[in-house]
Image (cartoon, rainbow, N blue to C red; front, top):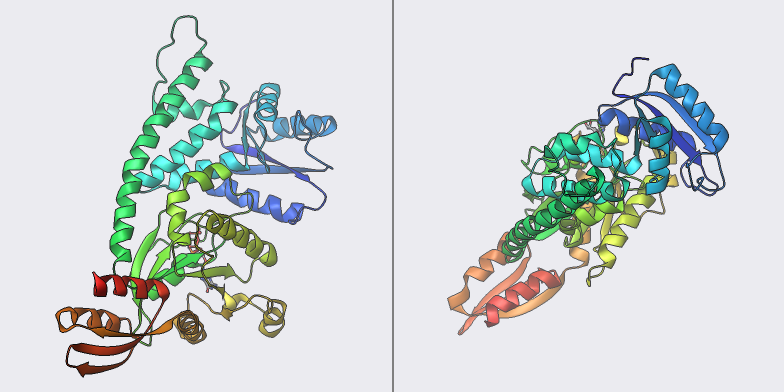
Length: 421
Ligand SMILES: Nc1nc2c(ncn2[C@@H]2O[C@H](COP(=O)(O)OP(=O)(O)OP(=O)(O)O)[C@@H](O)[C@H]2O)c(=O)[nH]1
Ligand SMILES: [Mg+2]
């Protein structure tokens, strides 16, 4: 039998109470496989109360899977859920071909797409962490990625040697990551010292976040009709029509069953989201599973913000790809529970006026009026406030300029620090 090294059988189970239909979940797994450069040949699904503890699918389905592998000369099995290490090992040793699960697949995609040094380190750490309890001799990509895994110590099996080397590598990556992350923190602190509002573009993968980013700024972020086009965060300044300056951050998209290894590994990147003043939750309005993708993103956002002391930033739901909607009125009604919200096409700037209005309202809503006497020695501060479009009035007094300004509490605190220190 000649195997096509990249051809795969996709396997999924339909559990009761799962939010996604099995068809939609498998369609997404198929898209993920194609993104990873794998050719899905056949989809096999089973109704179950819970995953089989030993082999994920039931014994009867295993026979069917065996037949499909032979018919399609498949070299990979891809399961739609994260397998336990023992399920993983069982399937690999039974079929003697590579087994991937949704997590492993997403990790492979991330590994291919990571551009920056930080993202590469984060993905490699997540991959090794995931791989460690699953290590079998079929994990060939280990040697592909890291060269020879090192020589065998006395009395050790190759597997034990590999595990030892992996742990060593993970410690090294952690040290390197700490260094990069402290540099990122410094950069953010520098940015924080300038009182400009930050808005994070957040949402399911392929929603159109980067398209919107490029329209609002000159960032030139890669836009592609595929999952996980963006991995690395980009922050750029944008000027709103009312001349207010804001900073917009674009970052990695979310997906259902996002591997927790990745959320942990990407935590510092995702911090850009939780540290933002406003969240712009971008949604592909034409997605077949629109309510579920909104829920998925909302859950991840609230998980991320929960670990912060700060409250979740105010969110604007940006229903994107509105040009693809056949019945805009009906759809808009169905989405009326999401507030505040706007309906736009990121590809068409002329649809942005409601977006700018809603964003300005949101900014205004959590700004407060502050009155200060700015000494003449610190007049520069007035320019900073003016640049943000929030200087309401100024009058010159004997000992300084009396000003009234509309600011967010964060901006105000920074100004006050400058004023009184
Ligand atoms: N029809 C239509 N397509 C759009 C619109 N906005 C974005 N797209 C397309 O949707 C695809 C995904 O866009 P991206 O901007 O890369 O999406 P993203 O949210 O950044 O995706 P990830 O980085 O993968 O998370 C691209 O093919 C875009 O051209 C829109 O308003 N209408
Ligand atoms: Mg993107």
